[in-house]
Image 1 (cartoon, one colour):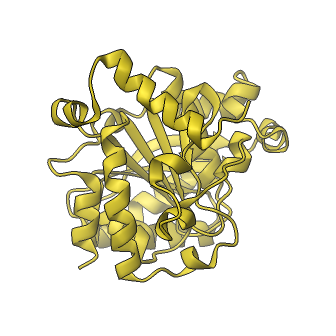
Image 2 (tube, rainbow, N blue to C red):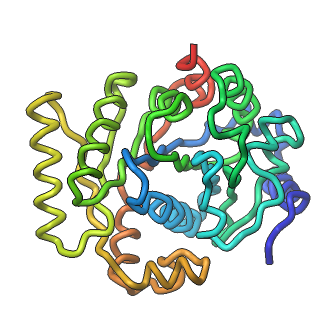
Length: 293
């Protein structure tokens, strides 16, 4: 059953009642959410498939997970999760609803904040608009254990500000030359704006392990040679018809067919150690607002 925004709010309130804490006390005594950004240099790498499956797998472990689809205006996480949000980031930016009212519950109890589809206000927001959006998103950090932010391809204002604020980034690419080149540019930019960022690389939709290994070696070698550092190797996800079926079924492949090769690989990605430590001294969206200035 698709949960309405009102029920989503009720579920968040239930979390607080079960803990015996009101919102103010919860924010004071509980640490802010860990934040992991997921990005790619170009479209078509399957980044949102990785993000949605990562979210459902972490939620299955009992974590309170929020997936924010920041592929603003061209969002598809809601389709991959099989939910139909009434509100999205555009409504939040316009002040129509508070962020908590735009949340919708998905598989395994995760929550999604959709980026919306065809929303002009989200296609090219100004720094001022982003600052306003980041300010109202900030309170969500106190409501969840883990926030996963699924970015659109490229390096717009929003993506760069998020990269500057996060401690942890997953770069999703594939073995094609164009994807590797664009992902290298993303990785380079991430380190330019955030020297302490921890970056992992996932090679997605690759036909064979040797092709994934060769592509990783090209990426690692170029990064080490020209930048003096390289991302961590997280793993590779094979091309798999089960993923195609999962998209058609609007259910993440790790739930639709847990034994499929892609499912096993994505479950391994969800166990990447830095996800458990993706927290900074300052609140994430406070850092992101600073990066906009």
